Image 1 (cartoon, rainbow, N blue to C red):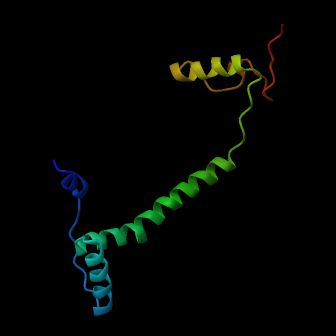
Image 2 (image 1 turned 180 degrees about the vertical axis):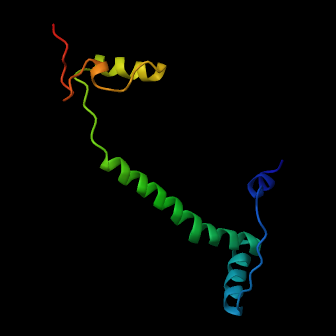
Image 3 (image 1 turned 45 degrees about the vertical axis):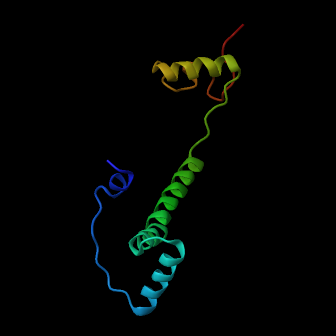
Length: 111
């Protein structure tokens, strides 16, 4: 399957009516860039509709992250490695107590 066909998979055909000014502007861009008019229209839709929505989703995700309570900082690299290794293998529950840390992130292990 060609890259174009893969890109256009699931595409829908849309017919629009442009006034002379709009058509002339698109035609100028098309000729200048050596691209088909349809490609210029798709790019305009991408920049006007799709990119702003994706940007807003990213901003919302960042806001959600900033609103979260901070996690405790491990007291030592050893504790961090133990917790991280457990998370990688699916054994850790992700809580500070399981990593040998107190609620405030301090080392609660006794020498």
